[in-house]
Image (tube, rainbow, N blue to C red; front, side, top):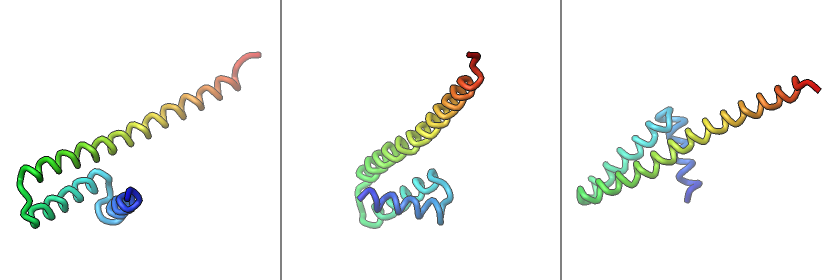
Length: 89
């Protein structure tokens, strides 16, 4: 199931929206339209959207933090190698 969702978001980001944030908002808008079309209660729509934004927002912010942490760790490793090269014997 996650492969299907990942492919759907990849398609949305690369071809339609251009950014992950807009893809998340576009899918939320589509979900709201589907929920209105099926005459779902407003309380269910509110709770479902809260759940969706909490999950997707956490994943989005977490992935940004993971990339930032990897960049910092890479910079630290490169500096450590340079210091090792220029260390006096």
